[in-house]
Length: 271
Ligand SMILES: [Zn+2]
Ligand SMILES: [Zn+2]
Image 1 (tube, helix red, strand yellow):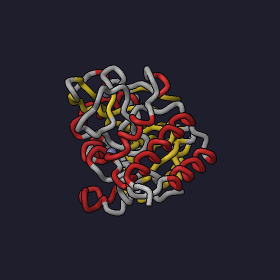
Image 2 (cartoon, protein in one colour):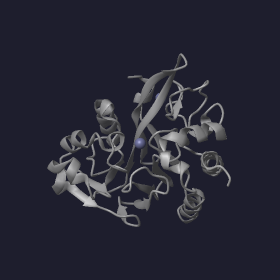
Image 3 (cartoon, rainbow, N blue to C red):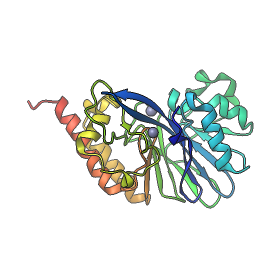
Image 4 (cartoon, rainbow, N blue to C red):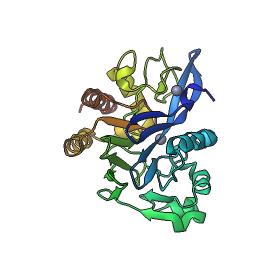
């Protein structure tokens, strides 16, 4: 495990960027892949968005204890039931015996029958009052599972987008690897702090295979929906599970839309 990503970053009042990076080598260069989780604390309750990778279980637990500062964890919200997003649930629910799982938990009892009594199903449009701020659950306009949800924190204006908005940054000639990666030293940087913003090519690269379905459907309507969401819910940060936190929301939206269109256009040749 690399050490750079082991420090949580406080993004705003009551919001912490947690989790770790997986590291690999691409063309002889070390590259990192985020598996992030985010803690949001209100005056009354706290929620962890995604769980981090099971390979980072002890790291996430230590980061969480530090960020919580002695408070309990009240809710865990895996954006969807896949290992990098929900894999640490058993560890977290053991460490925080009063924590409940919220989200679209329709099939979680199949993955975690032992936690059936701690599931609280929420749907897009529902909100959760944390005290002084609320989490609004949203449809995932870019997703890889049917029961993926996004969420928005009213206190910091953070939009949590799960597998959406993952970009690669500064990677020399990636070959087989199709993951959205960054370089060592960039683990906790906001997009606006990166040496260069990702190009459309880099954004398209992360999109093309990680979210396979985007090749086969027209994503324009998804981006219209995202723009509507951003209009309704003031957003300062876009927080993906597998990419650097985006603080240049408008610029990244344009880059990302162009990237999705490029992937879409490349896969569907004109008639
Ligand atoms: Zn993911
Ligand atoms: Zn990293």
